[in-house]
Length: 333
Ligand SMILES: *Cc1c(COP(=O)(O)O)cnc(C)c1O
Image (cartoon, rainbow, N blue to C red; front, side, top):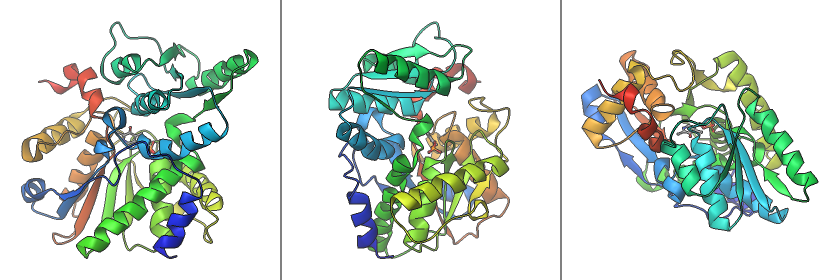
């Protein structure tokens, strides 16, 4: 479909202006040279601005527009203790002058660090799920608030609903405007994929605009067979919301699950080496949970010959660097 038609469909949802978009698109010459090709570029969604930035700002532009339409008086979401999504949601709520309740997994740490420290500074009220499921606790806390007469707007895990995924349909439209100006298309986009909104939105956007670009998600937490099922469902809901005339199947999603290691948030040499290489070659920070794992995966794919030396590959930086400050022990030595 035409670029302008897709933009009109997205604008009909009235996204808010929460961050700094378009984000920069830049080459990574020293990292590309260190690897001996392909030509690596970066999309700087770590620089979306609001509350230290990250990919969730894009989803929140659509989600919080709906919260305002529903006249919500509290914004709620959930995540891990070091959730970037929770921190960006707290920042967006602060910017809109709305209170924010975060239900975080597990128990409070001895001292606030990294993203959790920022949640506190952003004046979010943190409720700990303890041994309970964080998502179930989120919904039960929301119900309690409703009974007390509030009208909370509840954002699911990672902001990965169809409406949230529209942020990444818009992101692909943004990228296509940038590549049109540059005069080339990327052969592949590689990024950290976890709750699915980023990958579902990118896949829908790339298909809608008929881009020749492969969308390759490095799975952070889930094996590919289950995750591609989730992506099929979420992308088709997104397609329906935008009234597009195609559908996607689980086989249409390229998910790499070789880098799950010992699980979510557990740092191994894959992340450590990627963090150091990006810092030393480009002065660029990737994080221990998401972008370090994704860049580590990309480095491994390059080593295994997944791309030719002349192809152009875009590493989509989804943010997360505030978590570095909560992982000092895992990153030193
Ligand atoms: C949430 C997050 C992701 C994953 O995005 P999803 O839409 O949840 O798949 C990747 N990187 C960072 C830094 C994140 O915070």
